[in-house]
Image: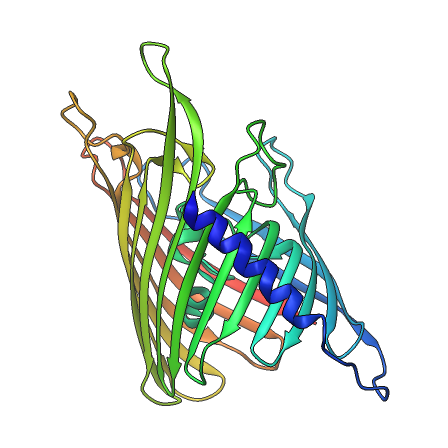
Length: 344
């Protein structure tokens, strides 16, 4: 727990340092509303598919951002999408955060905050409306949660983030044990290169098969590197590992998952580009078992397609998505999509 105490101290010190900042008198507060919609039509070519084709709205975001002063910004975002209860269009509070620019090198965010685990990967991938980035897609971490984080500018090329959050994600409240998730990352960004190391940890009391209670610590680790060779071509890869958890919010002793993701884009011009991505997901074998505990969901995923962006705020893509199961008894998925993103 010394690491957690250190992070708490670092956040407290950074907040105290910003208290001496002076605001300029000429600033005029302002704000704007935003919206984003993910819409698609897909055709399922998998053997034995129950639903051959469908139109869907997978996600809709509504938000408002207000610049209170030169150093304070407030923002609220609602995420409208399918929930575990079966409703297709339930609204969740995705973000309700206050950002405080304490100094040129320290910025603190608190409330329901956007997280850093896969933010850089998602931005580099660039096709969130088609498919989530690896950590988000396979449940290695949430995109937002209740808590506090601080971003530090170490140099023109190095940045660090430290955070303490509830750990259950933005769709759930804090669990009964009241234990938090804490972690940090280090990002290097120079010209076309970006590299990132991330780690977090959270603990929970787990009851084993004999009824004994044990404190188990779950961890997540990721390493990411991407390079943009020019305005036309970019390529990236990442490795992700999660220990002692079946999902970021579900601690389970000795249940591990890991995987790789590689993706690349070639842009012909500002409107047309082609892209491809490959994911590999696997899990460990539990003591006394002969097969991997997550075999039903282990496998290889392939996504490839072409995107057309006719005007600013509108994107559309024809793409193919497949998932090849490691379980020989499971049927592979094969789907053709036409995805749209429109925003204001």
